[in-house]
Amino acid sequence: MEPMGNNIDVHLGKRLRRRRRLLGLTQQQLAGACGVRFQQIQKYECGANRISAARLWQLSEALEVPVGYFYDGLAEAPQPEQVIGRGLGEAGGEIASKETQDLIRAYYQLGERPRRRLLDLAKSLNGDHETA
Image 1 (cartoon, rainbow, N blue to C red):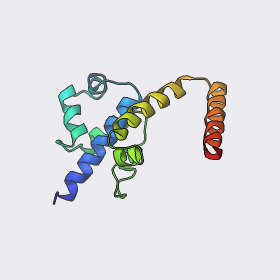
Image 2 (cartoon, helix red, strand yellow; image 1 turned 135 degrees about the horizontal axis):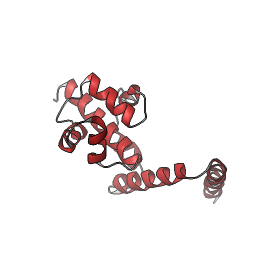
Image 3 (cartoon, rainbow, N blue to C red; image 1 turned 30 degrees about the vertical axis):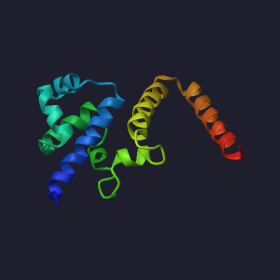
């Protein structure tokens, strides 16, 4: 059984990677914003190195999220990839995760009105799917 500390490091790393990718940043870009080498970001993301409180603060500033973002979902049993891939088959988690990130990135590049229209469209499509 893995020590609890390691589970937390892995969770923080996954949250770090998710947010970095969502913003379209490379490990090199994030490293530059925090004053570390990209290898250090790699180690944080895989949970090999523990993130200090000061570094977590820098990362939260660079990624424009509160520090608490990294701890969201820590108490829940399923890992984020399991939730994303649920019901999609074995390879669904990776595909859905990439597609979801691309969709969210494109969504936030739209202005407010087109975002609302897209959301209304998505809701209407979901409604059509449920009645079929």
